[in-house]
Length: 286
Image 1: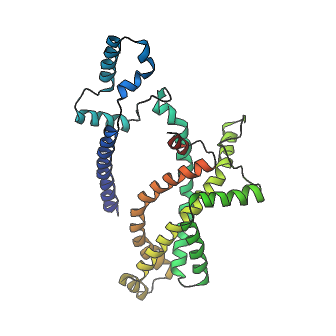
Image 2: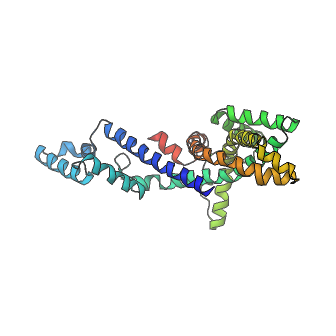
Image 3: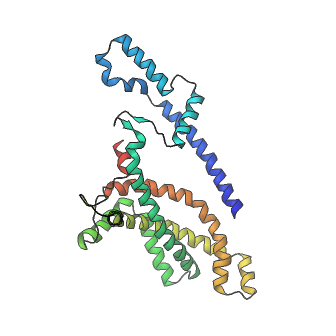
C-alpha cells in the first residue's frame, strides 16, 4: 500500500513539472511587456532617454534579460516559496493580495473533506452490500441528482430552502459585519457563515464519490479471495471491512487528486454565489 501511494506521489511530481513548463510557455506567449506595463503610468512625464533607462532597469529587475531556462527556474522557485510577483493592477504583491481569499478558500474546501469522507465511505459500502434493495435505489436516485445538477442550481435550491423558507443560515459574507469578540466567537461566526456553502459542496460531492465507492466495493466483493474468506468461516463484517474495503480503497485513492482539484474549481461558482471572499472572487475579477 505504501509503495503504491509513493508511486502515485511520484507521478504527481512529474505531472506538476510538466504542467509548470506548459504554464510558463503560455505565460511567455501572452502578448505584452511587463517592464513597459510597470512604466505605463509615468510614460508621458518622462523624456525618451529617461524612459528607456528606466525600461532597461525594469527589464533587469524582472529578470527578462536572462535566458528562458533561467527565467523558468527562477519563476518555479519563487512560486514554490510563495512569491507570486507583483500585481500591476492592484499595486501590491500578489501574495498579499490573495492572502485572505486563499485562506478562506482553503478553509471552505478542507472543512468539506470531513463530512464528505464521513458520509461517502460508509454510504458507498452500505449500498454495495445491500445492492438492489430499496435503500440502494433511494441512495442512487439522490446521488444521481447531486451529481447531475450544476453547482449554481443546487446552491440556489439550498438558499431557497435554508435561508428563505426556513431562515437558518446567512446567504452571504464570511463574517458578521462589525462583529467583535473572542477568537473562538469569531471562529464560530465564520463557521456559521460557512455552513450553507459547505452543505452545497458536500451535497455536490456525494454523488460521484458514493457511486465510485459503491462500484469498487461491488467489484471487490465478486473477487475469488472474498469467496475464500467466506469459505474459511470469517464473519461478514471481517470480510467486508478487512478484505473487500481494503482492496476497494486503492482505486478510490487514485481519484482523490482529481476530485480535490474539481471541488476547488467548483468552489469558484459557490463562492461567487454566496459572496464568499475567496479565490473565486479573485479569479473572476482578474
